Image (tube, rainbow, N blue to C red; front, side):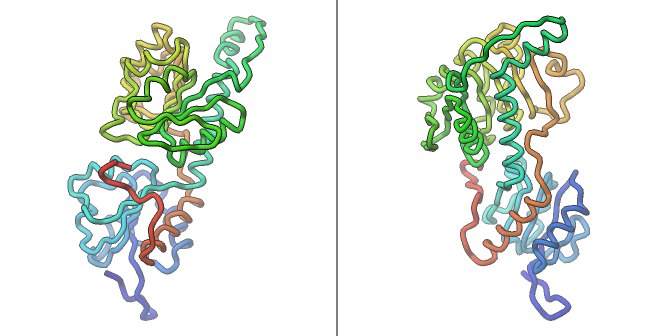
Amino acid sequence: MTRTGDAGDRRPVLLFACQNLDTDAWLAALRRELPEAEVRVWPEAGDLADITLAVVWRCPAGVLSRLPNLRGIFSLGAGVEAILADPQLPPAVPLVRLVDPGLAAGMNEFVTMRVLHYHRDMERYAACQRSHTWDPRVPPLPEERKVGILGVGALGGLCARTLAGLGFDVASWSRGPRPIEGVRNYHGRAQLDEFLRRTEILVCLLPLTADTDSIIDWRTLAALPRGAFLINVARGRHVVDADLIEALDSGQLAGATLDVFREEPLPPQHPFWSHPKVAVLPHVSAMTQVTTASRTVAANVRLLLAGRPVPDTVDRLRGY
């Protein structure tokens, strides 16, 4: 399960099995943060029996099942649904998702920016500029604006605390109780409609599971106050596209910020591109930062090798 190095020491061997990333930058960072490990790159991985750890992002299905001595899988993303979809995923190997301070800071910035954008009526002022209209209006106080966060894990919890700290009336919804000081928590399907009815700006930060797939459909959108806004920074499959467009066209929703989509890149012919009430972003709300993420991965690897509990280990039954 380990490899004998030149100095006679036995070193863990980590496989970097990632696609569409800057491999050179990641290898340099991982080797700097984990000097005690040998780092190899898929598919030039040598003897697969040597490998005990894997760092993955868009890893081809079946790769991990070929590693007979694998002890831990570390995702370079907060979401792990693509990894769990691998039918050959080794069933007993711990899977750890990335909760990285750099990624969390980026998400917090983005969500705060878009909430403030809608709160301060910036869409209307942009339209005023286009029509050369001078029409100042007094905005509501933050405490008069009801923001709702769907999903209060590491990212959602941080965003909820930040917005509450700015004075917004913030509520959250989660599968089970998730108390946060200054934030009213609704939980369970029985309380979802009550949460939606009081939410003027809805932020989706849910994990994607069988229970949350297509959760933002016509029923959910109809439960919001008329003229509400949606910010989806979780997964594209949370939203039923046709239902969202209908809600926007009818005036039920006043606008939507979409950073994630069912198909990425978003096809050029998709109506979201040209819809006047939709802001399309290319999955940039929270970008994994090599510097901070490599430190997080290294810390989690050391915990695993020491036999200690690893934060953010995925519960495969829940899907996150």
